Length: 322
Image 1 (cartoon, helix red, strand yellow):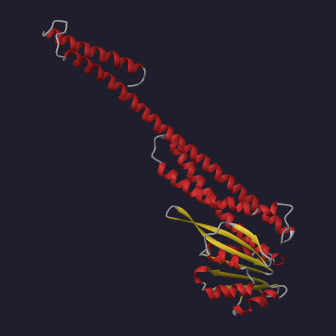
Image 2 (cartoon, rainbow, N blue to C red; image 1 turned 180 degrees about the horizontal axis):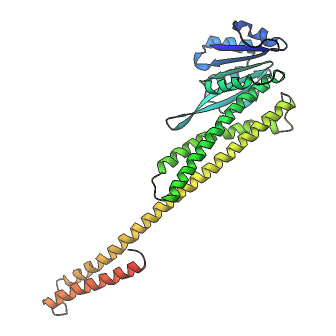
């Protein structure tokens, strides 16, 4: 199902009742057409009709339907094609919802996989755009700006969560937070998976040698979004580095605790080994001085065991092994 609205200087935004009039409406000077469709509600016939009405490239249509594309921005003869992603948190993980945008002469078409939240916010911002600024490049900038703002919110939330774990581990180095750290790193990895490619997608805007299909004023807005995306990428890297530092600290603490346990076990093993050695020697089947087969020999062996064990105990205690 395709929802289309048309904006004109006199009437403002209004819904398009007959979708077959789309090509005529976008062809009229002064009109700006925006259309939205959920890919789950589109049949192959609907896709063919939309592709014909908007003169879309077949490869772009294919990428819009197969909703596992990477963030990208491609230029075709009749339109631009951009792929963005809305991120939602489900069961403690970040899941991506694809938004495919076709930007042509006096129209913007979005085919998405359930990204109502992003598009609702974009439409709310479009209503505040001055009339002289309402053209396709501004609408695309608004959608990208909403997505980037959403990424910033997620990055800030992950940073706050990381700082909370940092406080816990500094107060209690042996705290069991490995699971929380692992889940945090998973979400960071998923966010980075879309932030860094998104930043590279916008790199062409700051390239002075690239011919821009929009005005200098719009290019400045895109540069601002690019800077914002770059800052988010740096924030994600910083949070990831701090998370790794916390993980290294917990590993070092566990290794130190294991080392302390190993030292104690080794010390006690050495103490008991002395008694075992003496008992083994005096229990051998041959006559041994002093005073063979006498009570003194038994007491002498016991005393020697106690004395050696005590010496070892004091020595290990001084070395802080016990």
